[in-house]
Image (cartoon, rainbow, N blue to C red; front, side):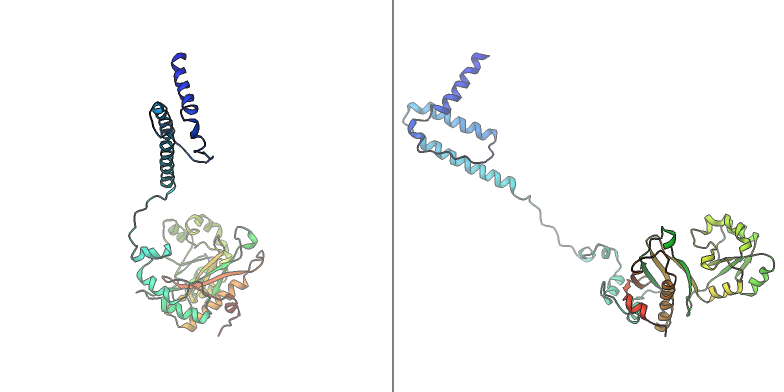
Amino acid sequence: MASSAAPSTLMLSYASTSVLPPDLSPSLSFRPKICSFNCSTALSLYSVVLHCGERKSQNWNYPGAVASYAAELEEDEEDYEDERKGAAYTPPTKPKTGKAALPLKRDRTRSKRFLEIQKLRENKKEYDVNTAISLLKQMASTKFVESAEGHFRLNIDPKYNDQQLRATVILPKGTGQTVRVAVLTQGEKFDEAKNAGADLVGGEDLIEQIKGGFMEFDKLIATPDMMPKVAQLGKLLGPRGLMPNPKAGTVTINLPQAIGEFKKGKVEYRADKTGIVHLSFGKADFPEEDLLVNLLAAVKSVEANKPKGARGIYWKTAHICSSMGPSIRLNIKEMLDSKLP
């Protein structure tokens, strides 16, 4: 094995030192250059050097051959680097048309009606209350009568007890809906609730019906003496927002007053876990003056029931919209300074 390895070692050393004639070294000068040679390039260079050594006895131009071949190798390396660093070829794509060409992703799932009516208002522009209500009525273009909704983002964190918001407001012009009121009571209050206009009055029998799935009412009012029995309905009424609560005015002794207020347009609202209040303040077919009165009544109620733990700026943003329409941003300062007509 040692004898077989010796000739190749001597051949390479001989090729690298004594193949080229002495007069070749002045004509070629190799400057250090950072480049990447692969194995095939290196073997090719050694092969030409060895080939030159075999032709040494003949009359052959060593310097010219080596120089030309070195130049070719350098050009090949430059072409390889250009191909390696070049950008990948990307085939041309077809231009998007229709909804797919819309810049905002959320608009690509909107209906044509929605995309048309949202052009009536400028995005992120703050409007005064009168102009916003006028735009809301223009955007209510569905075949049914849409509700007018208010959405207020407040600077509160409801996970803290002193920053929770839950209250009621009486809309002076009503809600535009027929409210079905059920009352849980017993004794003398039974006849009093019927005379006050309650749609459904009952005691333990009504509780059993609710347990069986009966939910044909919009508001459930209870007297304090019935609350221990109503507690077992928490899992059924709680998720639907029907559980009687003193803060909402649905646990009271004065049944005629509570029934009358809910019939006239008393609305309960609360801040969700993100600190936003959602409430309806009428129907889109209301006159603009009636919607204005109801909206300002709701705003004044939210302002008056500000939680004790709220710090800094209380109002962040305020929007109104129809049930199936885009939102309209309100100027908060102008909204708070507006007075009831």
